[in-house]
Image (tube, rainbow, N blue to C red):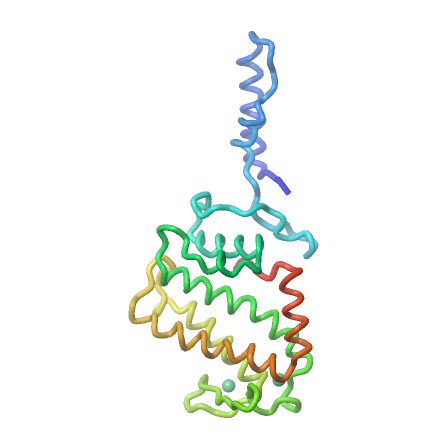
Length: 226
Ligand SMILES: [Zn+2]
Ligand SMILES: [Zn+2]
């Protein structure tokens, strides 16, 4: 879906009329397609009212083309939309980028996409069905309280996801998305380990939801810009 912002359209029209004036003495009044492509910019945004199946219909963009404070995140989301199953491409560190910042973007993306799984889980993972946070025979205490307590599974999941999101958005631990303080790297493993338990609980105790979630991520774009 190639679209242009009004300002870009104005510039195309302006250059068209300039070209027309300039070419009045020649025989051509057409803008070359090359010139048009230079002036036409793809609007990488879902317009209000866009249907979900029509969302994100813009082409993959290279990191060099992105001029944004959130370039690395946008690049990762573009990769996911292009081919969610190409794990090698998704984890490949982009040339010239900081490894810790790239891992940081992956953790943020994981939190974003897990919210979709939690929505599905909340229909059948309740205090009654899952009074403890278990994955097969393992039982986990919720560490998001002053002292770890036995939250039921859905509470554990929501508390853990909230805490991970809050930590990743913490200006104190992650003041910049370009450079990660070495002292904050210790949080990566802890966040990943706890988030992984959400998948494990779903796999062992809500297999149908796990499988439908797996199927849905193959069909719909799960990445949502912040
Ligand atoms: Zn459950
Ligand atoms: Zn809790």
